[in-house]
View 1 (cartoon, rainbow, N blue to C red):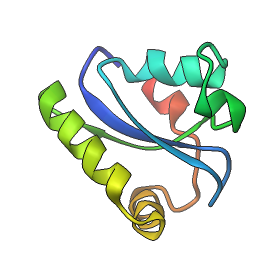
View 2 (cartoon, rainbow, N blue to C red):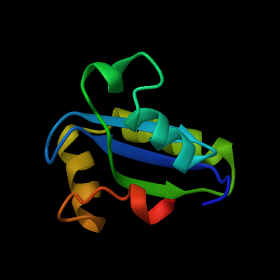
View 3 (tube, helix red, strand yellow):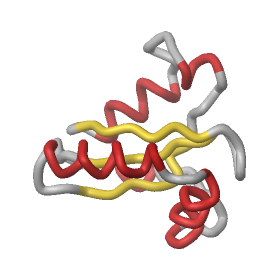
View 4 (cartoon, helix red, strand yellow):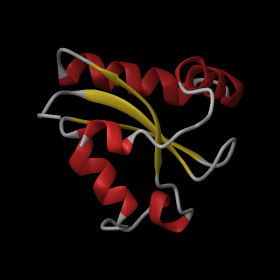
Length: 96
């Protein structure tokens, strides 16, 4: 996957801890989460599985969407994930 703005959700496990992020290089960013390259939330809580992502035309639209999703209730985020990934499969191999 080449560089393209996107919003993503990674999880510690099914119905576990969630992290919503935005990036212009999804494969690289998820690899960084999986390998605990950056100190912070995802390293501390072992949030490593890519369970949802959405491509955008611009970083501006991706950032607006990320901020909106971060404000959502947890139930809405779970429904978003399950609408496209009912089994909570790690989608990382699909993007590399």
